[in-house]
Length: 270
Image 1 (cartoon, helix red, strand yellow):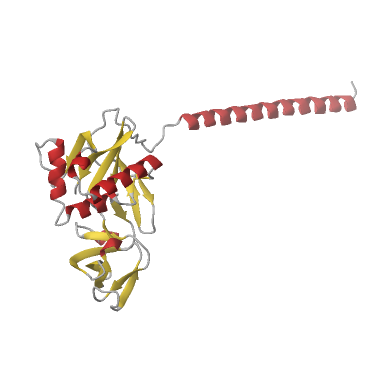
Image 2 (cartoon, one colour; image 1 turned 180 degrees about the vertical axis):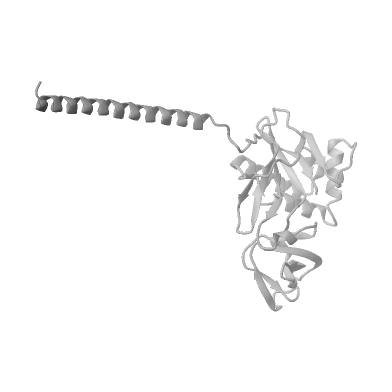
């Protein structure tokens, strides 16, 4: 073979070798990608699943490891729960029974595994008496207080139970100073902080999901509004309508689905 022929033969041989190497590399990449996809799909979830199923033996109501989801600009909830239609219907039924102030029908809504945790609970009582005792200790207007707990918009999942009102993590400016049972937050936007406890008093400032400290509770005005005196993180003191204030660490009523029906499964107090 002459010099020119040997040159073309070497060029063709090199071309086929390069093509074979390229195809091998592509095949290897696809395999690696398939392995990666399989590994990703079988990787265990870092967030623990919380199943609301009373047919299983659920552990006592207790705090789970933190897993926060931002729901508003300045607050978050650990393991938030979005109510399903059946749960909403159940809450509406409870609200009607609380309005009637019928203790016997409320006791009929208790789970046979009802748990009471906290200083508001009385040990050693049967479940029905336990519930009646804690309702009586909710304050001067226990049924109104119970209704407020049940009417909450925010819930969280606690070891297979749904509890509300949710306990809030304040994450806004000044969170390092928010401590103690007297602290709460404004649960709406542009709430007026007034100099006195009436709607004609001078407006000091507007509050939106801010942390405030409860100082005192005023008398109900002529239109049935309950006013409270609060202090902001900036030291401003004034009055707001009580319905716009929620505690950061409130008492909670808990629920669980048992054999397809929702029941009151517990009560938690800080």
